[in-house]
Amino acid sequence: MRRAITALEAAGAKALVLDLRDNPGGLLSSAIEVSDLFLNEGRIVSTRDRNNRGRAWDAKEEGTIFKGKPLAVLVNKNSASASEIVSAALQDNKRAVVVGERSFGKGSVQKIIKLNGDPPTALKLTTDSYWRPSGVNIHRYEDAKDTDDWGVKPDKDFDIVLKDEERLEYLKFRRARDMVKGKNFKEEKKDDKKGDKPFKDRALDKAVEYLKGKIG
Image 1 (tube, rainbow, N blue to C red):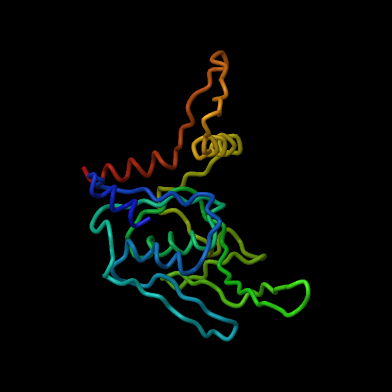
Image 2 (cartoon, rainbow, N blue to C red; image 1 turned 135 degrees about the vertical axis):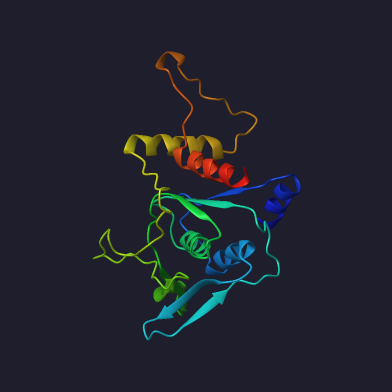
């Protein structure tokens, strides 16, 4: 990611959209590293266990890229865990505007404990919770209400909620865009009589509109 963004910046990029929609997460260490790329100071995330003991990670100035250039982050209801850590860190530190839908709300930390036995087995145990820089728990509990603080909400006036049919078209668009096509791949022909139109990505359009306004 560092190489890709550095190359874009060298080619003249003045703003960046980080698309974390449908990103189910990954390693805590990776989320911290990605956040730290864009932050030169401030809290990234902290964890707490059942006894309220925990650890915190702060950004370092060394290694920061894309300094002083506007950034937008796209999230939707399937953005979870590590992607929520990144979007929350950038939002709370006023480094990026968050656009799209409220994220999933997975703020729990699992650890894998290997057990002796044949065949080999392991226990996946929830041990900690994620807390964003603002001090709010990311996790959405079973009894959580929409009015409660969980997940990552888009910034004011940047909430883009998709209708069911629009979400289906978005998924088809992403699948077609991200598919690795081999040399024998044949593009599916569309019936022009149906009046098929290219998918209009309202969340991306909103982010680009914002960034254009920031860079003039």
